[in-house]
Image (cartoon, rainbow, N blue to C red):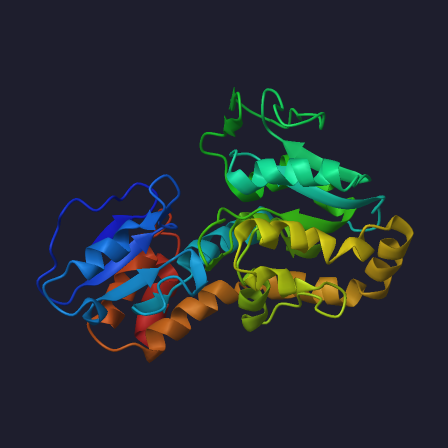
Length: 329
């Protein structure tokens, strides 16, 4: 098995001469080069590019690389979810006094664009985290959410070894819990891939209705895992628009009906059971269950590769579960 770290891998002339299992750690679209280097790697094989198997750990749906042999193996989300479970967070959803929240750390294209859109549409009544030293986009205030020796950069923050669940519990909990809607900026923009990270998990933990700004089929991917994405309340049709900027603008413009505090407070109250359902499902770690489902239906040598990835991921987090799984199977 070949392992590639998606954010830094660049094709350098390698030639795959026989079918390989390739594990892609993290998302892999290169915004600077505007390409998938792993696609170039596959296409330059001396054997059939479709004879290789790609295991992806961050992606739940992929139209960009759909012509290839993909295995969706959400071990990253499984590990993030377990850390939220282990954090033993006590939710309190009764103080929703603002309409929406947003949280920005790394200055990606659509995150800067979100700041512009909030100003353009005159959206108010929000809580937010903007972990920059200054905001070069507009007058939305930067925030100083930190609880340890983090290093604050001009446009971003390095939080050391803090877990995302710990950051949520100690810093961001009220940002989410005090609001009705989460505007989520997952780390994808150009690519037609459903990428879910801790940002979406925080929205579910906070008892909010999710709205993805710049995502591709994120709502569809989450719904496939059993989550309620409130399709009767939110118009998620924006998430399949061809142009990434349209996906961003239309996520808001098609849902301007959500930006009414009194209306949203009533919606939250009337749908408390659905928010609780999402939290209960999250606490069952459906991502880990999906990983084991992928193992069960796989054949060798893929099965052995998946079982090698699982226990080694995130400091051997799932070693005991994998041992038990092997014993039971």
